[in-house]
Length: 366
Image 1: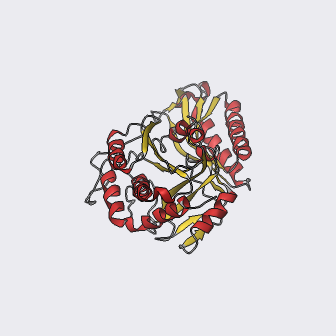
Image 2 (image 1 turned 30 degrees about the horizontal axis):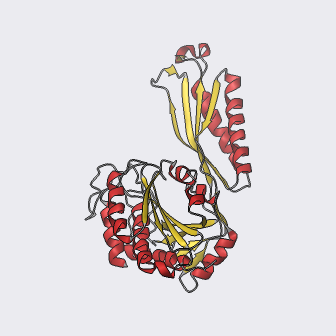
Image 3 (image 1 turned 180 degrees about the vertical axis):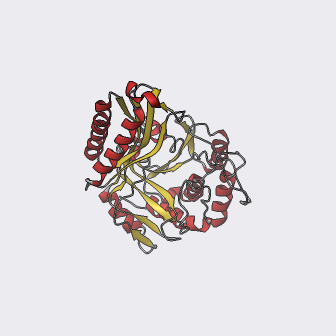
């Protein structure tokens, strides 16, 4: 198993691609799936479905994401990215390697399976849209999927351990895009202008003060700020961008409405207009409690850590869980180097428990 994981992960690490445009990644995955006897079909443009028919009434699905990040990879890795400026810095190469290695086991054991299996190789997790395109296509209904699982490598979990929790697992998330539109003027004639920069800084300070009053689990941060092009001109435009996250839709909508209110109150007294937009959110990722119980039974005896609280990161696997009961779990790397870092790395031996968990889940009867 380890040699297969190394082979697949390192080959895929060399060819990181972005979004839905994954021609080399798709071809590698297809080249490994074709001999295995699965029914193969395209999914969402850049993705692949592999269906293993065990002659059963329904199916269990497993998903791996395929896309990489626009992060330059440092020198030093012997299987470094061949696509300059792109890197598998979130472990999606490892996710595909686990699912391909699992597929090889499924091909040899399909007659033992209590359910048919659907393997989903999904594009565009990082840029968004991949999960929604597949989940919304009717494929889960067409293949009568009754449960769905996904694994994500995680540096903060101990090497060789699995980790998860029932219920809320990851947050819903949107980007915040706040614009403040005023009127420029020379700094010496500042009364003749309407200071977009002053409104935007007031917004940031007021938002931080509001954030400090909240007791709900959430994240509310402005991380990018732009205004002005001269040292002596009052800017007519300022932009403040950030992120808002919560674990249920009610809290999320409340936070969005408050962000709009705070922007308006910061800008109106200065004669400045505010515009606040939000990117299309991922739904909150909620692990089905009943599926979680069966997961714990399936992985009995394996090193495991139950997480005490959900994570403020987001993942579009949640789009499947809005339609089918299922769950995501972490596969521990033990490196401590964060995801989305150019220094991200892993030892493929850490992936073995992830594949073993997939095998045990595939053999679970109900």
